[in-house]
Image (cartoon, rainbow over all chains, first blue to last red; front, side, top):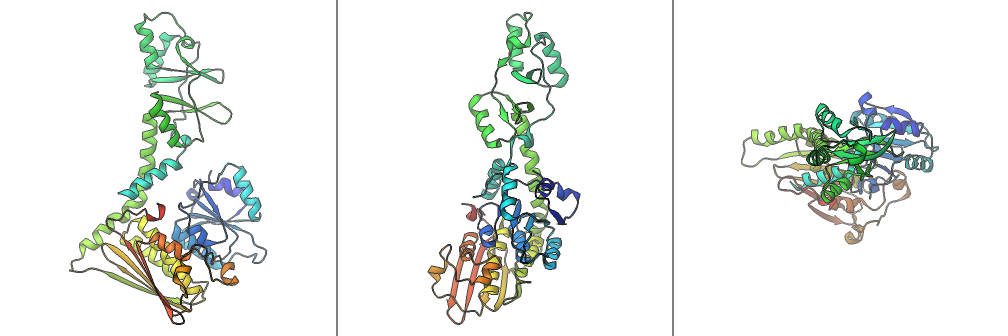
Length: 120
Length: 310
């Protein structure tokens, strides 16, 4: 599945993308977590990180681990995406989405659209 | 070399049949005469074809069937009479590893590939699979190769009895906004130096976890990196509270993190475990009340590069 399909499924805003080619990026595996160390403990690098966390550590985690796309879940506590997050995403060339669906629904939608859990 | 093997294995696990299959398929009908088959095969330069009746796949016919028919006196037969009926099929979403096993076991040369609604979507032969794999490998390698080229030159171009590069970053305690910048910067610098990407990833993860520890648990400190032709040493120094019980702290899931740390996405108790997993050698020197020095060593030469994956 392409990242643009995921954007459509999650009805997500695209906060940063490098170029059209990056929107064609193939997504085969997704990890969803608010705990960054749990992401870094995965044996394989997911193509997309889905998280409710909204601070610069999301992008730093993606960057050091080599994750090329991040989807942020809109958070009631801090509804505005941190400018530092946007800056870092641009710097690290990490595609950034923002969905208004909650974590549970986002995971459910992606799973039922044929993205299985393949990360241990 | 081993991490290349691992990469190849992961590649195989990741790839699906529809990543490599040929989508433009020449098909024949069961009503085609056997005598027409030779012309069709020759024209399209193929050695076999799925047999389609309407939209339904009913069989497969190959050059071996054609030879047998010629040998038996080339009588006026239809394809439908000489084809292999109900051939083994694959589905587009199946992993490539699965199909390779079947190729080995069955001895067949080609398999039709069906989509979810059981309609013909493509065809695979050994040649098609190899071509698909090579293409993918070429893409994966081209992402690595350019920095590798520069790397080998960097240390070779400089003459000295002992060569090392030292980089130091200051880490400010509780500065959440800028936390992690030492690790993302060292990652970029190692890339410029041409270190292999699997090594960079391990160093970056270990360094990032160590840096976050210094930011969150202590009041900052320094991150120091020493890069030599055969290893990278990362030393994280802080003047924080120190670790009371190192053995306990090493246990996966053990955490002393307060709520605010957890809200930032850390404090899962995986930090030291992750660092150890990524490094070839890790040492903790800690005095409660004084501070902690964490030394991480990752070898860049004769390194199997797969520790964190094993």
